[in-house]
Length: 501
Image (cartoon, rainbow, N blue to C red):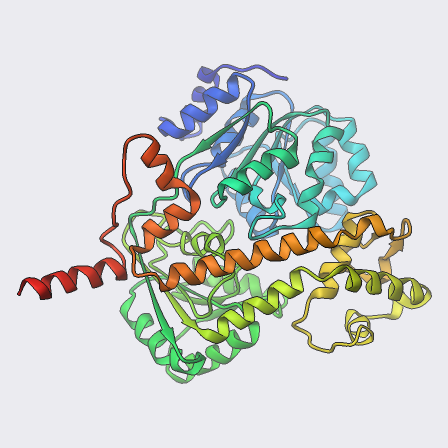
């Protein structure tokens, strides 16, 4: 383990324009210099990334940064390169020749920070290269993705404990903005650092966000309310959707009403999505309609409003998404438009994310049966053979991801023509109890969001209580207080004024 002094990190912060450090950053970095592994659970925009960037720049070895989204790492690396920092990234969107060139620089010691997606560890060539390098630090961004109890579990993240062991147990820093106490404990356990890690919990308070919600009979009733909100909020805005089909329909409706906007979703090609992103960030377009993947790693501090046309799947997802507003600390308005059919949509998604063991078994058997023709087979062909034709039913993709994670198949870049079989599926792989527990956890998260939405209590007190922040306040002698800046607080203030008059 490389030992460094806090003064060294402060000097790097000074030379890179990040001095003085924030109190929370200084506290965390002091623990880092003492040799501790860290879990940082800090609100969006609180400077988490600098806590691994400074040790990386001050140290002599390589810092490996795991990030779930290409847009996130590209944004980080773009900014770092502008500052002259020796950083690069490797992911599937980079050409093979360029990947080779970048990795040669890593091997030559010219790079201090290497950003990769967790899928990169499926490459034996990449793993062999890492074995020959001095990886002194492992940073895991969006660390809640590692926990099956989190709102955004990703099977590839669950391998990171194994990867850490393969790298010789380097000092590790996990970072996230949204994690309950249960998820925090699971992150530490999955990474194998639960015995010696220090957790730095800075709460989830965002006093500048005005939270509100309105319930409607159906989506059609939401449209005029959305138009009213768009006129009300001046400045850049994000309107989130769960379903791409709904996004497209609302986009067409907004066009007829004269609302200039861009869209961002998975059915668009990469070039069109990137064009939408750039026009929202720098081109003057103030409204973007997007699915939840949009916003991670996008550093636009002056977003004045975030609205959800459909209810998301958990309080964690909701608060992460509204957290993209008001990073400049100026007041920003966030509204949730809810209809009962949103709940039905999310329940369907939960079924998709937790296919039962029988479905996984059937998927494996079909793959084995079609082994010789997978090079000319499409996912929809498999979907149809498994007795469903709904293209929004992603149980097949989930089953393939788990078979890949368990080492039953290798499924590079989600291409069937590249799929190979590694071993037979065994009954010990299929734990019905684990699937049930995962499904129950997701259902509880969804119902917690519905309960919070319908509660008459302060919006933020309810969220802070969910994440355990109110318990911390009570333990230190404080108390949770109504924020005074949400629709529920406004309703109570108006009711009180009416009573007094």
